[in-house]
Amino acid sequence: MSSTKSAIVIGAGIVGLATARALAIRGFKVKIFERSQRAVGASIRNFGMVWPIGQPTGELYETALRSRSIWKEACTEAGIWHNENGSLHLAYHDDEWAVLEEFVAENQAGRPAVSLLLKKQVRDKSSVAVLKGLKGALWSSDELIVDPREAIAKLPEYFTEKYGIEFHFGVAATEVHSGQVRTGDGKKHRTDRIFICSGQDFETLYPQAFTDSGITRCKLQMMRTPAQPARLGASLCAGLTLTHYKAFEKLPSLPALRSRFEKEMPEYLKWGIHVLVSQNHAGEVTLGDTHEYGLHLDPFDRAELNDLVLKYLETFCRLPKPQVAETWHGIYAKLPAGKSWLVVEPEPGVTILNGMGGAGMTLSFGLAEQVVRGANLD
View 1: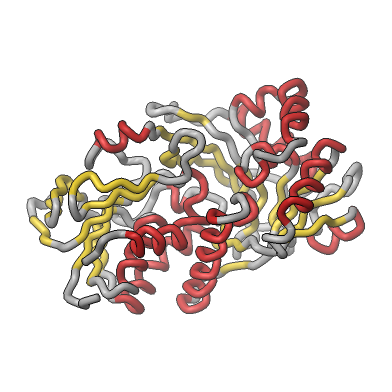
View 2: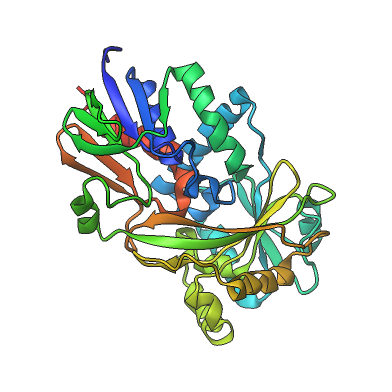
């Protein structure tokens, strides 16, 4: 691959960063245009979880593991805090435990990082997990945590130094055609390849391609606590999370669990609530989240939904400092069920990469390598 080839990536969120890296390691001279002065969208408004446990065994899981290895390399070299603390799915009911047992029985051959833990073993992995009534837990050592606000801010400088990627913040791409990008300052930029990684902004460039895909938006309400007095151990979740991720959706015992939630916790399913707990380098804990879908979402957050999150949190996690210090919401692009991402070429030399939903931190680095490798870049 000739080093004289050039590429432009539109969007400096995690998908754009991953795509720029994948192009650079294949010899392209890469520029990124980002309309904001810094990335401020979904890529910094999340848990910072690189979460392979949520992906089905096979291609998606392997893609997540590849992303994890790239995250680890980048964080180590760039001095970005990260924690390979793994995860615990806690079970307090027989139907939850049945799902975990099935998951391990069906997947352990392809996922050596997972195992079942009894109550007395859970305390070794978490200082805040509620032990009363605990049946056991699914332990996975694959999961890695970053602070997304720190990581997404530091990666551009690292990518510039290591790969020579050129960043243009505060410059919006307003028009794209094969071989050319026009920006808001009136300039035209010639290039060999263009990759559009615009996240939930899918009305500006090639809107028909997005409309044809059935893409929509998802709004998530989230919270963060003050710094806790100590490290808490593994990232935590409980039974509701088993109804959320693709890794569990085909297990025979899952319908019975979902049926119980429909009867006992209908508001949680209505708002797509499942509760995750992750701790950053400062000791703060990120909590959430909710899922509200639609092209036009309510810009205002609902306090009662945060209350539902906190109520469920108390059933499996007791934080030393449970007070809420920050609240916010994020919005990401989401494809219809059954589709894991959007890769489309609306015209020669232009590729759209989008639609990973809530798995952007987990899949982007690995997926970008696959997309760039499979593209006709000659």
